[in-house]
Amino acid sequence: MNGMPRNGEFIYDERVKRLAASARAASSPEELSRICVAMNIADVINLGRMDMWIAKYALTAVYCTLRKFPKIRPYLHYFGILTYFEQNRARIYEPHAGGRADLVADLVQSTEAFCRDSHICFANGGLGLAFYMGVRGYEFSGIIVNGRTFAHADILNTLQQYERVGYYPKGCNTVKSVIDHELGHMLDYALSICESREFRRFLQKYDADTLSRELSAYCAYGGVKEREVIAEAYSECCNSTSPRPIALEVMGIIERAYHARYG
Figure 1: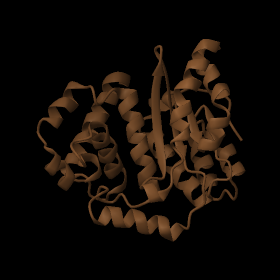
Figure 2: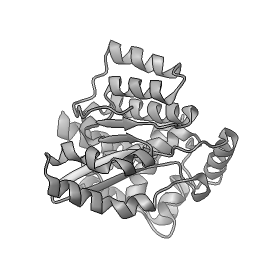
Figure 3: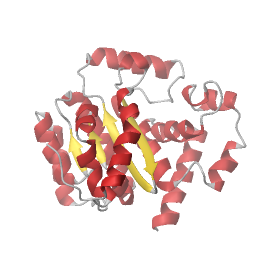
Figure 4: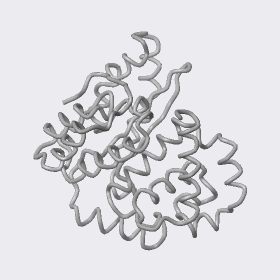
């Protein structure tokens, strides 16, 4: 099931609280998709035959981020599996392109290569990804979640191993933490965190070795990956019971940027 574009602020109220509670008991991707549409978490939603365990973790991550930052909801245009997105790119893009066929065509062309190369699996160290692009001033963002079915024990073992050796941040050893990482990218995109003066000053204080040791090896592998620093810090703050100073510092930058823009 997919939702028609609504594109408004996320409203957290008693109705949404009840829907969130019902999502925990959903027994099929179709039922969970209907709940996601009713909650207004994205313009277009399609979970396909996604593993329900993964789908519920993904929804939990999105729900928690939208509760904290409700006004970024318009930046979440698509939430779901890659296959549906590949097959329906033009239809998904059309409302955001104002019906202009030239913009739709540009967006489809811009993402064809991306989609061919983005069938994600845990062997490559990832579950989901967010992707951001601009065409002639038009911007599109979404969260793609792997629609494949995995052995849950294999997923957890991989995530726990990465977190244990420091490749992932502290506490980031769940499916939810992977989705939170991608939502960190969306926040970066929506709030222009990476380009902000405050974040640039923050980066001047830490070298790659320090970030690798005190945040994650992933964000500093082969040199500092600035946007990954933001995503990794956000994920740690969302998932660790005791986020470390660097993660908390980046979260503070995100929160101040949000409040500066939206009040």
